[in-house]
Length: 339
Ligand SMILES: [Zn+2]
Image 1 (cartoon, rainbow, N blue to C red):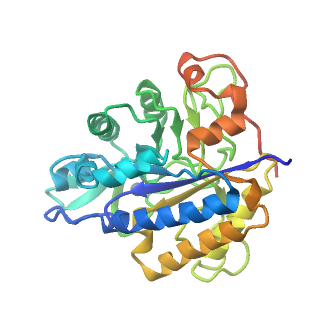
Image 2: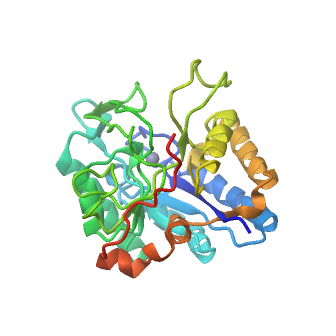
């Protein structure tokens, strides 16, 4: 029996737009719509794989939400029954802070990545709000706009996070992910980040630690290199693309197959809760699930949370207590074929 292929579908639960109007408490319609949609897909995938299907949801509880909605935990208060239903299914609820800081002077949101204190504040406030909302510590984390630093990786370790999903291998450093938004600093270069999960070096979070490493695991999002002419993408296509459900489907499919050809394949697919809100991205969402349901390898697929995926991939190397106690073990799974 060939190895199972862990697939983690990780959805960022956010307001429908990015630079939200600070004077209006708009409901998170995308989340309201995606919740029943994912439950239907869960049933279909369970039939196709003959196993339980669990998703991962990473939630916004940061200063932008607090500023606009009055409390960082607004979504949990408003959508408590949805969160209870997800938890009952065994889904993982993680943290997904962004670095948006409201500037009265400029009357806009600034993605303040060049401000260490602010970034740390965003993470600590989100972590505190999570504990207040759910009565326990978060275990999974994904920073908004793929921002990360050694300092924040250290903070995640201190807060007891077990798995970070922020890094996206292959991408070069960039000022911003969207040119019409105000940002400071840089989103780091991830060119040499491995695809396989690893325990990061204390000196460089982008590399596996050799002798010393952090307690938490980095599980990078699945990325790949799109080829050919792909409707919806510029030509030539960007060198690296992240598997974001809602991106042009032919590219997502190519990335999926590229990662499936790794020596020990696994998939970390990302989505944002507004994916059903636009007819183009909704169609791509449908295509993605149809593709999974009819894929020739589907009997090997297991739809699991990132922590369950780590357990499957790292076996004895990964267990929750060990993640807390630090033991010198191999730090990289070296799962990917060198290309
Ligand atoms: Zn986000």
